[in-house]
Image (cartoon, rainbow, N blue to C red; front, side):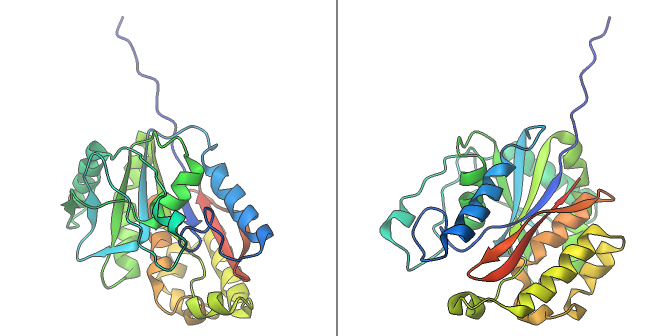
Length: 269
């Protein structure tokens, strides 16, 4: 009798706030309840079941002319932040790369009529290694990154996400790593932002209801949109996540503050 392979359970798609720089591992002077709450949420990602076979991260901190995927087998870390204590530049997260997954990503993009490129030298930036070090401290899951596309066009990033939907059925966890509110002036002042509250209410409501792709295409019409995102690179990973989610329902498993301003995570499926 021919042996049948058990189906692989579908993975969710996540949009997560990755905080600021190496925030959980060095002292930034932020309120301890903020740090503890965001860290607890991020660690909870590692407990999601079923456990993924690999991870694909779309980080706000990599932009390229076309969608570009890391293909190295042992990616280094990019300490792409500055002004932090020396310990921030000694962090390690030696997860293996995922060359096979990277090739699959390129094939899916090209099959969808999108360009794709590879970068064998690229390493994990802090949008990946900081949250993943919390979620998967054992660093044992093959992991790769996919870039944003310069120009930051919402429709392009939604299309990228749609092309990647089959990965969910192949055991791959797709993570959009950004911040639902990213205004550095507000973060530096640490006074909180009423604009962050209004934008967050719109965003989390839109992601849990029908018509979320249309809402994301028109995101600049949202309340306080340009207060929340003077430049939208930290929102674009959500576009990829929403595109990859298809019709999967959206939930908000975390809503808290960072430097006093409201941030949220969205899970699909």
